[in-house]
Length: 407
Image (tube, rainbow, N blue to C red):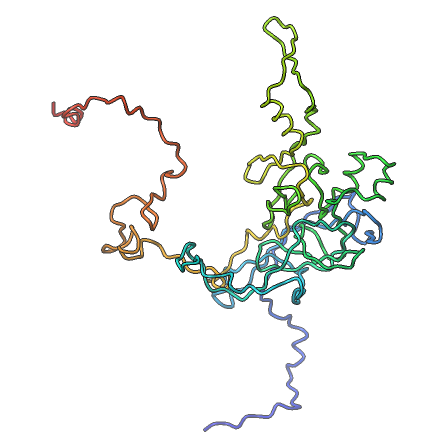
């Protein structure tokens, strides 16, 4: 017989007081790697945003990852970087537009799949990010936001002169309340007057090369870490825009002490006598290229020459712990517009060169792509041997039998 349900309204149970004694269950834990701040670093409370060209506050660099207790199988292996400083609300409506008609599941205009493993995903709005940062003057960081279209974070900044809002790529350590500048239009007049009316490279670097400031590459000191690097003058940044990426300024044309207007070159002959020789056209172009370009090194080790008037932002791209995340379940990949990847071994023979057969077998063939091209053994990267086709070696008959001892 079913018992009647008791009305718990106004009922005082004797164990109600235990809620204040027993701590609540924790669903996640934070793994922190604490670093002791240096003794000469100043606290963030001493930072005044009203001071022009003030350096950003120093903050503790802590690498933090958040793990979860396995309440469900989907969060057992879930790992996320802790970004509690991100804005919890919606983005600015006028700086976004809906992503409609852009995601076609990896298909081209004829409907054929050209990029595999794409499709689905959550509905998004594309943020219009200012990669060029041509607006001069100080900009106050309103907040740091998450952008679903990129791995790095973006910062909503407001110009103190025009009160105009815009999105920029956030540097690591940038927080709400910081003041960033853009020196792409040139050096401000008040900064130039503070240096005595002439440009002092050392003073200029000390006053401008701060985290989050955007400036031409020729204003960057050697050894500076930069991101959002441009490839053409007058165009926005194109390199090092992903989370945690940066480039290093190796050398500048002014450091080479090369005069592009020279017409003769002094060299020594075998006897040690100095003689002059007119510069060739190739040598003149080389010297001009050295003067007009900046040498930077990417994280891959590649060294590139970038024009000195290209833009770059001081610092490292935000969210550097993004590479250590783990999604935890297949559903999160589907939310990110990523479809499953099926092994060729599990397919039919008509779908993949490795497919078909009884049991786990790929037909005793070399590893191939779905289109029959070799997939491993350095097919794309190994240099081809230079074989002289004119030389034909004589063929020795029964060579195998002699080697095995039959002869």
